Amino acid sequence: MTKSFDGNNNWGTDHAITRDSVYGLRIENTHSGILSFLRTKYSKDLNDIDVAVTGIPYDLAVTNRPGTRFGPRVVREASAQLAWGPLFPWEHDPLKRLAVVDYGDCDIDQGNPHEIPKQIEDHIDGILEKGASSISIGGDHFITLPIMRAYAKRHGPLAMVHFDAHSDTWSEETNRIDHGTMFYHGVKEGIIDPEHSVQIGIRTHNSDPLGIKWLDANWVHENGPGKAIAEANKIVGDHPAYLTFDIDCLDPAFAPGTGTPVVGGLTTYQARTILGGLGGIDFKGMDMVEVAPQYDVGDVTALAGATLIMDYLQMRTKNLPDKV
Image 1: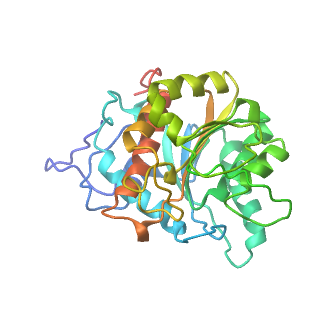
Image 2: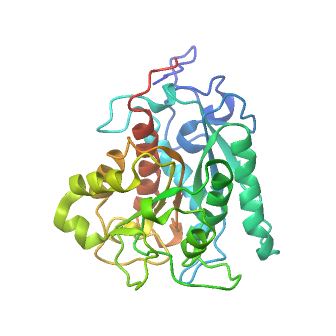
């Protein structure tokens, strides 16, 4: 953690634009300053950058309550509470081990909805072409399909680790843009490798999971996070993987701020524990989706989303050396 005191022993402000290094967590008053994810540097320069955090403020594909276009903003705001040091129970600063910047948001033209999937894919292409990986903050869950299309160009079919209340594999043979059908298309397009993919926390009916293994919510409650970790690692193996986390995987008691809440979900503890145990998986990128702040209570959903992204960074860097 970098304190970055000024001459008056103040912590300094606006590290998102004033910091001179992309490395290290920075202390700044959580209630003030220009917001970026974890107070990382805002930058469009991805040379020598490992991870670009980017917002995808899109919610035209929802089937229930809209509002996730505001997700990137509130998750960034909540992350200010996490930028003071390593996240419990981790003991290292992940930003000393990876070069991370906030890349800003994808530029989306809401007036031309059928062009948006390509806009999102091109946005992620631009990040990957520079050699960085992406952490995308949604937005509704449809955004994962164009994101994974960009990744599949480079890695081939991807194992998918998917936390959600819904499988999002409902059959849909038209060109509708829908946040409940994108993984049906992902499997059919050959982007998702169903044999090595796992969906965790599911608790809505779907008679055809398309060959993807479910560790549904009741299974997790009955067997515990430890067995879920072991099963997920076994299913994915050493295949290149993508992590997608729909915040409604959590029970509405822990994440009320979402468009399609379903009772009986995972606790924040269960989700964090499972995610933290997946460090052996070769994740190429991740997203956090479906945070809708207008339905939130005390920002607990936004904080959960920011914390789970931080857990992903901590998990990915656990066995890496410090660069600074």
